[in-house]
Length: 290
Image 1: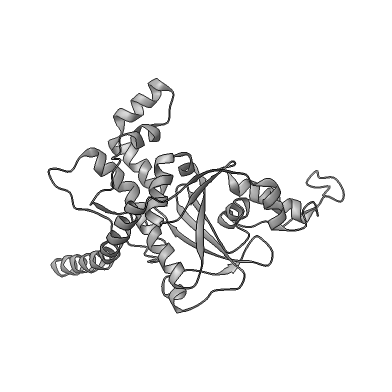
Image 2: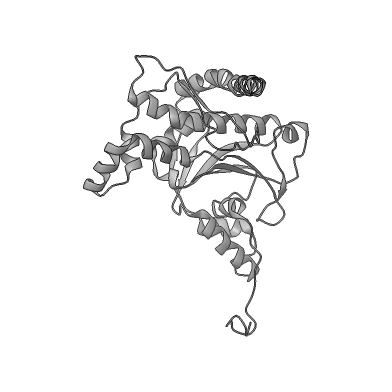
């Protein structure tokens, strides 16, 4: 304490890494409620009273380990290309929105999202623009945009980017559910939680309510809760969550759009295995030519 300039008797409380911290700060302290964090990476975190470790979880690279909330377990499902894909679109195709945002004192992302189609698209964006997360865990992935025609509009192409990220996460949510992990609602945190448009799209895609929290930077709040638990200020993580976490807005699924995305998920789920076979075949042919 003396070397660090801390007062004698300073309490040190153990924390966690970022996603369980965000889950704790989102009130993910009981089964059935999941965190949806949208930053550079898109990540789900779900709480469990008992470990769920079965063949389906293992085959799809879904870990299970102790939660930051004492006595619970957690699993993470994630895609490395989350908000970073929208940033790529902004940097490469959003020059007009970037200039408009500077003039209006707004975020370019807001203007991009305002340009997106209000209706679901029939396009598929396979969003692995960097290494993939669960379920594939592929360090050498392949991405694609499928279904473009001369009648495709810019508004549709832009919306399809958000749909692609969300299809990938819906795939993960469905795997968790089939593995025995219950998800009744999501709580949204991170930069993506500021967008009503994206939260409604996710609610429709996941067929589950999405709740925006009063505090979007939930990982910092989660570690404040951990410190409070360590100091004895709160008797338990659920009690701390009840006192500190305020739900702000709730987005509920549109049944027709949820039905549409359910039908489309089957086709989306087939794309990555086929794309990997194509990638392997192209690599094999190149090596033969070399």
